Amino acid sequence: MKRIILASALVFLALPKMHAQDGNSGLGTVKELPEACPAGPIANTTCRRLEVACPGLKPLSVQTRITEPPAGVALRGTVVLGSGSGGFGFYGGQEGGAVLIKDLAAIGFRCVDRAWAGGWTTGEGGLKKEACRYATLLTWIHGHIHTKGKFIASGNSGGSAELGYAITSWGRAGILDVAVVTSGPPTARLDYTCAKQPSPEWAALCASIVPPGVMECAKAPGCTVPPTAGICTQFTEPPTPELLLNDSVANPKAVLNYPKTRMYFLYGARDCAEPVPAGLTWATKVTSQKTIRFVTKTPHPMFSTPEGREAIRQAIEEGASQPAAPMK
Image (tube, rainbow, N blue to C red; front, side, top):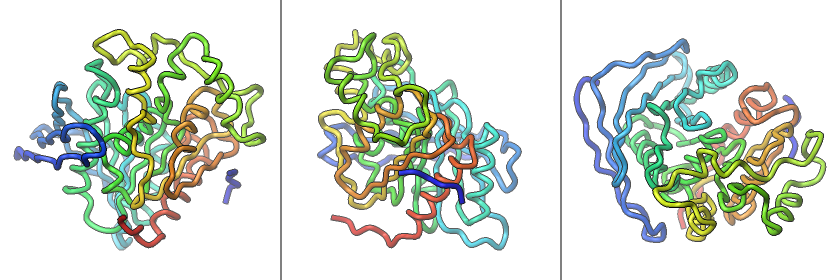
């Protein structure tokens, strides 16, 4: 083990409203579309095309590739995987992601890999609002595809942003047994990162939040992205610092305690940009059970190295092997 350092029918689903503490309206609806979609090259995989509609957002089509364990392998649970950027590609569309899906299926996990048509970020009022789509899809998968064992989700970079919003602002920790957040989320504190120059507060925190000795970069990780970056410009009004803060994963109303969900935050030791310090602004604030690890020889795409894939697989197996956490 590598060393790790700290469809033919139309189906409508009305999803439950979120917890009152989330301060948001309910989730959206899912409709199964009759059009076929390609299953891809991974064995034991089928594909279902869905349409997700959330209040105040245009409906968005999403393909879901479902990979089952080989015959004779006992089912241990379901793992939902989210690719980076706007999520318009499959996690398994890259070689390392496909290897991880095959490995997870081989040890008994059903894998659900999603790809949004055009991406889930659509400039309709902020990332937190747009993440309703993922939260709605995750709930549909839990109710319609997940059948047995632990319900687990993992996302890399932009995929970790979807997952982060679903947990902190859309109440989805209630259905997740394990969450494995990798390489982010870069949207944890948009008011910090969407600036030409880091504020004095963020400059100090960015320099100190990453534990010493865990990174393999020639210099300290970056702290900002251009204000014109896509994650900074999803609003229908000019993005003020207050608006950016309220649209962050770790926003002032974010839920930070998840008694049912075992949280894992994984960062590549060679990820030398802002997602590491940005992601830690959420990870370090979580008050329930969590594990933060830094993975050697691994850049931003966590699944791209043997060490990164082993870290993700280990977190999934470790989390899935624990007794169900009691609800409080």
